Length: 119
Image (tube, helix red, strand yellow):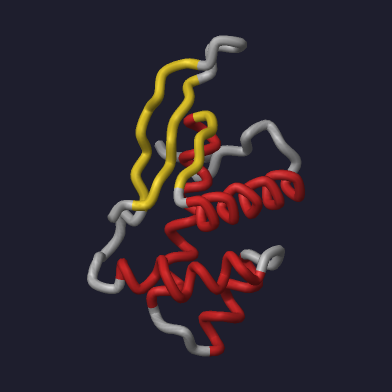
């Protein structure tokens, strides 16, 4: 059975998790890559790919509002998403990001991964 295998909770309350994922996606959009733990990177990847799928449809008002509701903090990140990132993936059916394992962190031996856009 495949019960309760939907989304990782990341040991955070729902409001904190939502804000955390939004901020991580803003960092990914702004700088092009993100270095974090593997579990966090997997959740950010899911969220970022959903945003790119929304932005791929075009720069119409409906998709802008939908993306703004999911990512309300920074208008600059939305502009970059719609103007630079989404047009690159119009012909691509999915898989806009790449997860690269980078070993373990020395302090707590957590698995570290780098999340970046596929070019």
